[in-house]
Length: 440
Ligand code: BGC
Image (cartoon, rainbow, N blue to C red; front, side, top):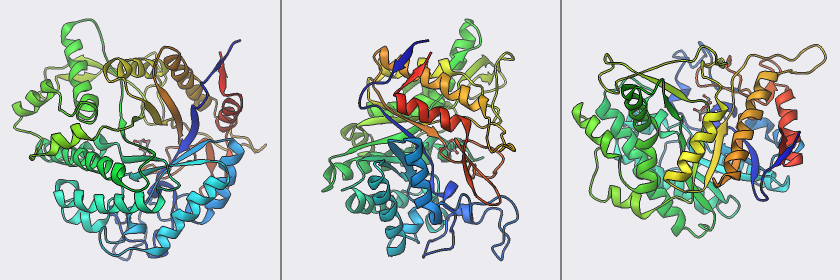
């Protein structure tokens, strides 16, 4: 066995997001998001899984910081709930919400854990949502005022910022027609660029700022040129449509043409692409869970592809293929094409597990997932890729946007008592962090 060490300065962390863990939805002046209405009847009572309580992190954050310290986390990525700061999205500031994140940030720093903050992770204020959400350019203005407040207020202590989490998901996980989806995607990208500009101009702008994209390396199912083209199209749709504007200041020409063929175009106004070009990020955050394998499919008019699952592979509860090699390939591709610093802002797996009678959660499948992916990261670094941080998704079993059945935690959370139990994968990760390396 060899121990493969991660370089000095490489940071190990874990990630969460506000609505998925905080709970306390009705407390201390928090406003409403669209998520607060889902699975609730008119009286506001839950009719299905909701985030009203979630992991109750809002009340247990001190205990949770102690747990992170026990795990040896060097950094913690979390998102701020916009409606705790500005309950209506714009205007009135909520001092109690501001104080909560002050306490969280200060507690983390006292524990020696660097806070890394996502400005927006999927929980748009209801007032903005009702006014058209990210399809409405007014949301960009509101977002920038919110981001400016965060930079000014927390930026003395928070030195890593993520503008948005996963614009692809925000734009495409709905049944809107393509032009509407492109409009959401474009406005998110413009908001990102303008937030980078604001950050650099702010009094605390000496840290680092970037965006978080969900990426999956695409492979053709065979060497057949039709399969190769199918994989390239999906890559364009999922990955390059976001990577190119953020890192090159332009949309990929092949996809612009493809969208045009379907009557869709990004609603670009004068100055938008210039803003993207003029405000490069300090790093690229990537959320990586799996890969895609594509086969040509003439019935799919838009991308000409269909998924070709590999029957020999292991799949997680989400139906996502476990493909650690693909993370290595993706990192090497990103290095070759964009050459930028990368943070792996999410990586992890949903598998069923349970606390056994002896109090142990033996999540060997999740442990193997982490081992395989950390090994790919280390190898990519050794081969020249500039990866500076890795965040496990997720610190806790949490509200997986509609269900509690998909368990991503390295820490188990009892659904009734909310008791936290570090899983075997969490213990493994603690060992990796302590040794700053993995055994191979
Ligand atoms: C999101 C998380 C989510 C995770 C697992 C990412 O898409 O950022 O909020 O829980 O993946 O689905």
